Amino acid sequence: MQGGNETMHTLRQRQPTGNLIAWLIAALAAVFLCGFSLSTEAQAGLLNSCAGGPFSFADLAEKVSPAVVNISTTKVIKSKQGSPFGDLPFHFFGNDELLKRFFGNIPQRELKQTSLGSGFIISNDGYIVTNNHVVEQADKIKVKLANGKEYDAELKGKDPSMDLALIKISPAAKLPTVTLGDSDKMRIGDWVFAIGNPFGLDHTVTAGIVSAKGRIIGSGPYDNFIQTDASINPGNSGGPLCNLSGEVIGVNTAIVAQAQGIGFAIPINSLKEILSDLKTKGSVTRGWLGLSAQDITDDIAESLKLKEKAGALVGTVFPGEPAEKAGIKTGDVILEIDGHIIKDSHDLVRLVATLVVGKTVSVKVFRDGHEVILNLAVGERKDQQFARESQSNERLGMVVQDMTPEIAKHLNLPEPTGVIISQVKEGSAADEAGLKPQDIILQINRVKINSTKDFLAETGKGEGKGTFLLLIKRDEQTFFVTLRQEGKK
Image (tube, rainbow, N blue to C red; front, side, top):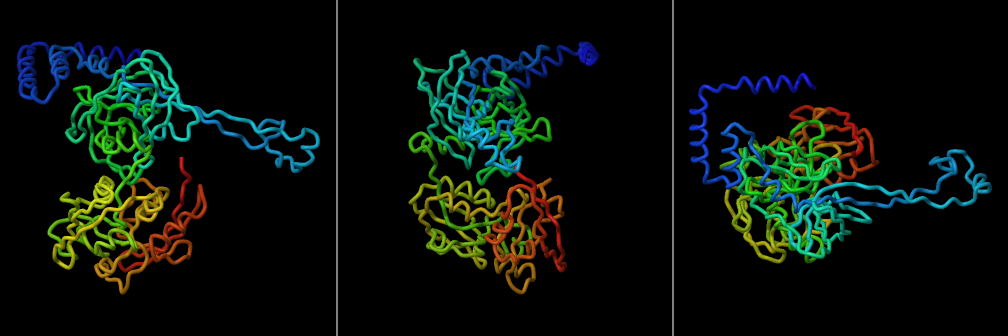
């Protein structure tokens, strides 16, 4: 390690100095040209960098850190009745009753499971935002402020679908707060920094850039993550991702364990959309159409004579739900809802979730070569409705859709049969088995598959590890594929 440091030091010494004045002039010109889009702190930092020193986030960190908190939770787990020989169960010895005669009924033991996370204060009376998985099922929530004071916290609202939660402490005085920014204004390549408690280390600051936006990582129906290379580690969950004005533009949530420099944050605008519900109701009310949809491929666009590959193709319309009442049919392509253009099926799900329940909205669909305008009264999405709408199986790493007459016709099938794979997650069990989008699943373990309901029923049998034998139709070929399901981590 020492040799490595010396090498770095040598490289710094070899930086050219002859053109220092020209370099400074160019750097100052860059500041002038982009100064209108940078905050005062950012401009000062860039000038500092041009002068030969490192870019500094010190002022920004001092501004935000007092409102970042450490969250620790405790969950009490009651163990099953055990034996006097450690954690070995009675049945290990082959005679439960015999052991009970000697040792009696041994009471259950309580085991405490603890976890750590981060959060940030959004109001001076003690409301704190964090991830739902940080506080989920916790029996006790402790919050430690930057000044070292600790408080018991109460869970006020949660949204498991988006992995967000709102907790509340009761401070004796007003607390420092963060400023919520506008995540839609962030651009790929913008500087960001994160503050949190990775591995329990209080108030650690890391910096990087926005690597990508709108990332879908398979965590839920509303995936829309900001990807960043600012270091995010276990314990950072729930902490803020900030821009160069010190505004929070994301909630740090997930990492790619197999890679370095790939972290994900929930856009702060997604939090703003549900914050009122979390405060007042403790849960989130979302809109519901009562249909399932899939993305438009080039082939489907050509088959349906669409001008461009956009919109969402309706697969299933659930009986008695808002979509059916409005006249939406299988095979329709949803182009717009309430004036908002629909890019794909994921965009459709996110938009519908934000619609006001009970509101009548216009829906523009493409049907039989013409655009049709329908009026739809937005319903309320329930948990069981989500189960009906979702056709994804995270353990297998693919998304399937019901076979529609239009898709069957395009694939030259005599009749709609099986379910069609619309997405395959890279590196998943489905990917390793060689499955591809537009493959048709005809059977699972010799059971005929007629719908996504059949698919979910068969793939849901058994928990943990398991192997499935799939009969696949691809083009003119039919063949079997063995797919191994791995247990959740």
